[in-house]
Figure 1 (cartoon, helix red, strand yellow):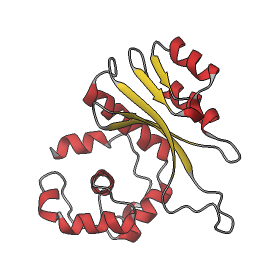
Figure 2 (cartoon, rainbow, N blue to C red):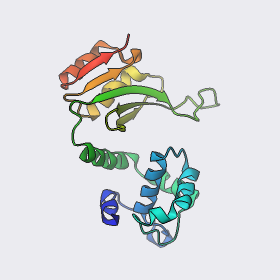
Figure 3 (spheres, rainbow, N blue to C red):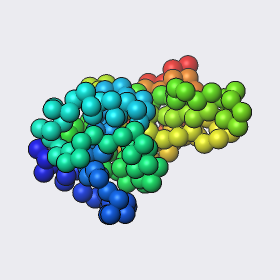
Figure 4 (tube, one colour):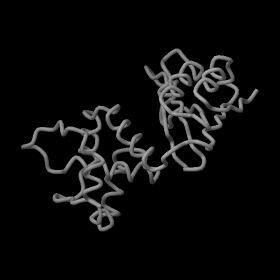
Length: 194
């Protein structure tokens, strides 16, 4: 199992200074992934999961210097190129589910918890996600640009996934003629709320 986890993250070049490294990058990423899957919300949750599930984690990763601190998770994710990680996890997810043909994909926008548009200098962070009900898996996600809305982000998200043979559902915000045409052009069906 360790080999498959190392292989999963092998395309991510370790950007850290080797003489300062205590924890393997693939160990950090695997713990973070487990924490997020378990509804973890922040770097403290990643550290907590590592400590609480240490024996279980040893079945899959080495952890030669124990569990990384929340500060280590924070530093790694500040320097990590998110597009590389997204691409790796997306490809691995598609290998897992093989195809989206015949599935129901729900496209929906949400404000990320903890971001308040009323806070000084904070406009809020809004994302649009593509959720596959049958697999209980998010297969795509994009940030809504500032001073924009879901209508402009949904076409970008649709371009990033193969929806051939899938049924796409979108709430009233995404009920736009250009979005319906895009779904048809990509080989999907749609149900749009009015």
